[in-house]
Length: 211
Image (cartoon, rainbow, N blue to C red; front, side):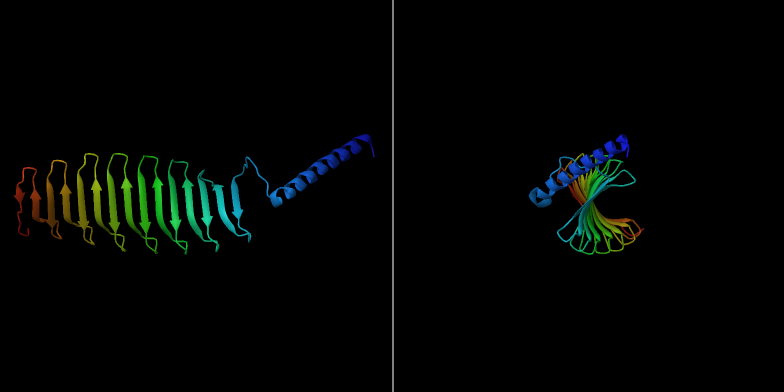
């Protein structure tokens, strides 16, 4: 064995001794749990005392940062994501894994909140737009929008009710000028009753024939 080989072996023995010492230090530190200031990785999984995955943090192939929280059965219950396009969302799931609530902010400045039923059909959407409009949509089990309530940046407020064919049947308006009105429409979209009060106290209630 030449001198060069002997030197390589001594270097390896030194590195191995240092590694064994470090392992012993980790085992002696708070029952084997070490504290690190920084951990750099693409995916991180945290398990519970029974070695069940409970938390997963990962940056996916679309450059989105995701955080998954699971219950003891392994079902995903909370999913948080920050996408490369500027959206940030948090989704809450029920015990079956069905998405029930999703809240998010978007790259255009809008904020949204959506609630879903047990079949994951969206039943309510609340929006706060960057242009100052705030709205709430109520949706039936067949995914038809049935009611929309909104206010705009000027302070006007209105409510629209729809039938199952998406025809507007009732409109309620309250504007910043003090006018309040309600308009009833038939299934063909014809105005039939238009009740209103003006800022000067005038009250009108015209009733129209069917066209």
